[in-house]
Amino acid sequence: MALGLITGLARAMRRKRSSSLDILTSKKGPRDYYKGKNCKSTGFHTRKGGYVLMDEKLPHYVVPDLTGFKRQCSDCAVATWG
Image (cartoon, rainbow, N blue to C red):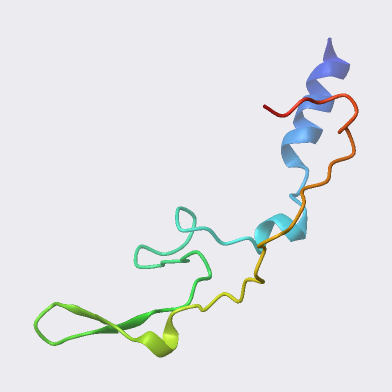
């Protein structure tokens, strides 16, 4: 019984890993800390509270033309499409 008490106290006194201390979240940080989601802005705020989207800042995706593309699968012999 005394051994369990001693091991419990030793576990409580054990220090945390240093890698867990440098993880800062919005709940553990200061009151005005905002972490965000690592996304870029797509425009700017106006003086009157509006938001203007800028076409230069919007992402443009280049997608190849897929007309005439035949879909292939590894389970074509087993699966039936219909």
